[in-house]
Amino acid sequence: MTFNSYSFLVFFGLVLLLSRVIRNWTLNKAFLLAVSYVFYGAWNPPFVLLLLASTVIDWYSARWIHALTSPRARRAAMGVSLLANLGMLGYFKYAGLAVRTWCDATSLLGFDCPLSPPDIILPVGISFYTFQTLSYTLDVYLRRSRPWHSFLDYALYVTFFPQLVAGPIVRAADFLPQCDAPRKGTGQQIGWGLSLMVIGLFAKVVVADALMAPVVELVYAGSSPPGFVNGWAGTMAFALQIFADFFGYSTCAIGAALCLGFHLMENFRFPYAAIGFSDFWRRWHISLSTWLRDYLYIPLGGNRGGSSRTHLNLALTMLIGGLWHGASWTFVVWGGLHGAYLIAERLVRGTRVAALGLWGSPVGRAALLLSTFLLVCVAWVFFRAPDIDSALSILGGMLSPSQAAADMAMLVSGASSSDPSAPVFLGRKTYAIAFGGTAAMILLHNALKECGIEGLAARTPWPVRSVVLAVLAYLVVISMSGDDRAFIYFQF
Image 1 (cartoon, rainbow, N blue to C red):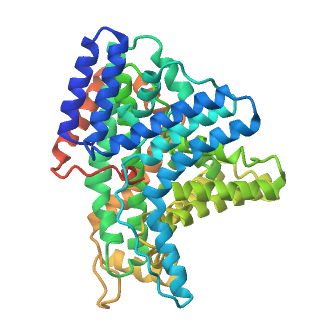
Image 2 (cartoon, helix red, strand yellow):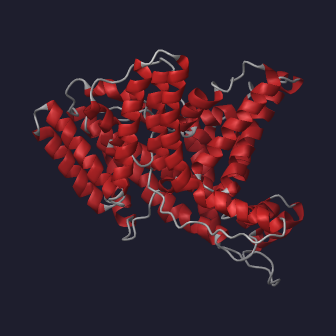
């Protein structure tokens, strides 16, 4: 069951109605917990047991950690939580990668590999709820918080259906206090929550699926290297697709939660307006980037051990962040590139180049914004490509000056070359969607990076808001197809 399906609209309508009918707050929370399990079980019912196991293990681990006084015993109790959570995540998500890597290594040494990659179904959302439950036990271990008093509240925190399968990754300290007093969405909250859901569905259904996905598939599913123009068109289209897809999910999740009276953290802050890569990661997938900062980068030492140690900590954090996204070395390369970007940015900021005023002048900031976006796109190639060889092939065309000249001639003439090995002309409409959409998205992000959607809505007269939302809703309805494309981050 996905947000972009008619079945979810019926499900959510019933949940919203019944949650307002049930007067007793404890029964209301139990109802929300039950429907959250139904929502998750709609994908694969047996995996509800895995979700329940993770919930129970971390509930008792946190209480055990809090009750112990010996540092060694506390570390052992924390180890139980880490072993259980990372063990489940490692088996379901990374066992196949481990076997494939082992077989590749033995083949290079001239040996036959007796193993074959296991056929394991990845539980949807396991990376998200594993990090969520781990943050609870880690906060108790680090004495940032105490174990919560109600198992029902805690179970709802872990399984709350709007954000269960693709975030935002919620912190217990933010969610659990909301469970103390009865909550029902006010009229204003429901109105704004439904507006956010319309905006999120528009981003997913219209922008990501209807406009950008076909361009991306033309380039990345092709049988030959796409070359310069096609490579950049497909990659920029993917930059828009993945943002619109994940921003769409997060916005729907925040809106659905608000309708029920709960507040979830903002997960995106218009990242394609970022000036530099530290700014990018303050705006992209904020719940993950802050999780990695608080539970990995800072415990590793952060920036407290000198430049070399800081750079190592950045590299390790981003490599692990890349691996979190998927069981493929392409994701590790993607994370490694972002680690390298962050390190390079720190080095540049400490030189005379930074003193030239690039970060302060309008022209310099525009150049840095564009440079940041283009380098983010270079990294997206590894995120989207099926393997390292394909990514290098696509990137080779994108960064080839000789290929650029030939492809620009193709773009101007509006026809493919007679050379069968040359990239295919995709059509001016396709290029307009990719490059025009990129320009529009960067301008939109730059316009909204300070005020956000809520600030823009507050300054817009309500009749205009109503017309815009009606148009967006209409475009969503006419663009929805029967296949209900899953959100990209469901695979993580």
